[in-house]
Length: 268
Image 1 (tube, rainbow, N blue to C red):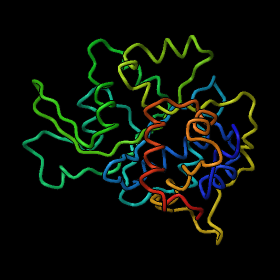
Image 2 (tube, rainbow, N blue to C red):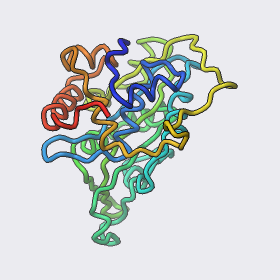
Image 3 (cartoon, helix red, strand yellow):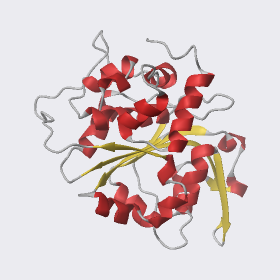
């Protein structure tokens, strides 16, 4: 991955993680998004990212290092449980039965869903007639979701970002695990990072990066995430394709962010 794809504080942060940049940067983008980047009137700023690699390539290490080094703002919900169903995901995102909701429950809050092994989530998604893929698709573009069943009428309000790792040995296994249900739109909404083989993570000697004064990193991503997307030396398509081979809907989101926030895309 060309290092020119990375920019500003976010790029410097990822270089200090001793993780493969192909995996660290897209992961940091999704985590930064999950930490609550304000939406504009026309562009959403949540992201979905999946790290792909064979067993032992450091998918979990990369995610954990970023979460350990960059603490979430106090108001942000970081969810590390796996949704077993549509209603299960609603409940993880603070939703409940409509009759039990008050005014605050209808105010969308940022949520970061961390899936150490995406295979567990994809297994639920690929169950015949599962509503989970459609729920993920809707929450990529909207802040609310509701469903009615014998169990009741459930709703949630959330600005959802997601990051996870997927163990795959080759392209055939990826196609098998990712499943046909994701072709309804979830695949197109995902940024994919690839973990290389035989990376030395220096587990014993690694220390989390800090701010210049030695303080723990607690930055709010309102600036850091958006500045990370200033990839101006190449076209947005060239840069993002070089970064993670991402898909059209995500490219549109990046272009929209750059167009609607021209003054925000400056070095910190």
